[in-house]
Amino acid sequence: MDQDLILEQIQIGPMQNFTYIIGSRKTMEVAVVDPAWDIDALLDLINEKGYTLTASLITHYHPDHCGGSFGSKTVEGIAELLAKNPVKSYVHKLEAEGIKKVTGVSDSDLMKINSGDKLSIGDVEVEFLHTPGHTPGSQCFKVRDTLVSGDTLFINGCGRVDLPGSNAEDMYHSVRKLAALPDDTLLLPGHNYSEVPHATMAETKKMNPYMRIKDLEGWRHFFPD
Image (cartoon, rainbow, N blue to C red; front, side):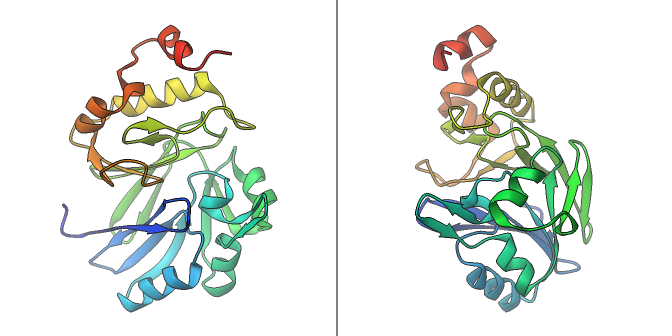
């Protein structure tokens, strides 16, 4: 692991979500990925370690990743984070409306980005990768030789494509896009759905049946219309 890179994986909430803290050990600046469920606990951890929070990065608009209500549950998220530690939330431009709807935040709270855009956190660079399929504006974050994948790619699966706004064909192309990353890329998923919390891309390709599908027709066999 790069000694200058702050990278912490935190399991949080009843849905086995992973939140991440990413940043620079040189400057002690960090971003939090998908802050939800217990904002006070996340901020306490950031403050205890002497980090300065400069941004939140959101993979997609589902409330277990950014806060809001679904069913009978109300989940803390970026609205509560902004009230206690105001920072911009970086979202893909196609996801912004969904995030505003579920969280109640406004346009001025968001930074709408495109695939390929980059953000510097201290001297650590984050690259945004648009990976639609689970939602139209789902995105992953590439940090040096690490990929934070949200609900696009799990170690032994991928995000659901039977939800409003999801699309199986888009997911196929997103998974193939991620499969092209170097084999030593460390995959950090959005949920703890596997026997291991992280794996290299080479290991993931061996464990994940969706990554072994090489053509769209084979993918449609898994996800018939």
